[in-house]
Length: 247
Image (tube, rainbow, N blue to C red; front, side, top):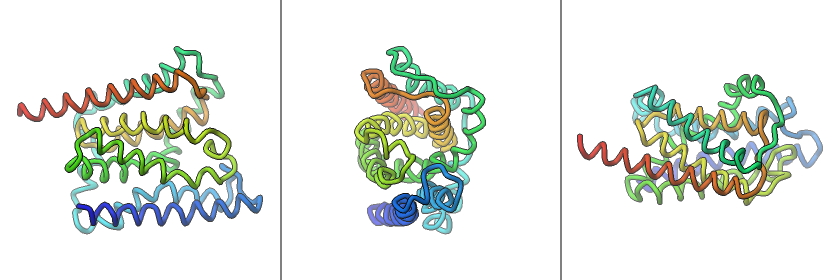
């Protein structure tokens, strides 16, 4: 197990850091500011899709059924309902605390959700589709999610040096806090039926909302939202475990 995890992480980090590294060089030279539509955006997409690419490269030949299993809904109504619930917790709670500023329109968000598959959504194939269940076999849901989150935080570090990204101009601490809530939400969505599609939709929709719909302030609302996502995710994980034990 540890050998497979290491191989996956080495591949994912190597691809990501290489291509985001190229964007950093272009950014320092004044040739790329995200999301400028030049060669820099191509490098950005390759880096963002590295977790998925690593799964294809390393495991498709070993287990051809792996991708077929995770890329399908098992119970669409349940999975989509939970997806909506996690999105409402993530963005609704900061709204109630007055920590949300409207920056775009709903049509922009809807249009850019499919685009965000390339700018974050497909990461989930690696983080939640492969790494999360492997970690859960040894550590359990909570510890596995915390480990996955810590790796996820480190993986995003190059974005701090690319002009135009949130990480470049915003607080990386608050970004890490938002990732913590998202990590538990996505892990729970995957835990329900083993499908990666709700995780991809959660990630892509969240990115589209913060990029083209809402700006969430760094305040108490963000902290409460993160805590609520964690609690709800753990509850879902416990219910899934209890349900499976009674089968």
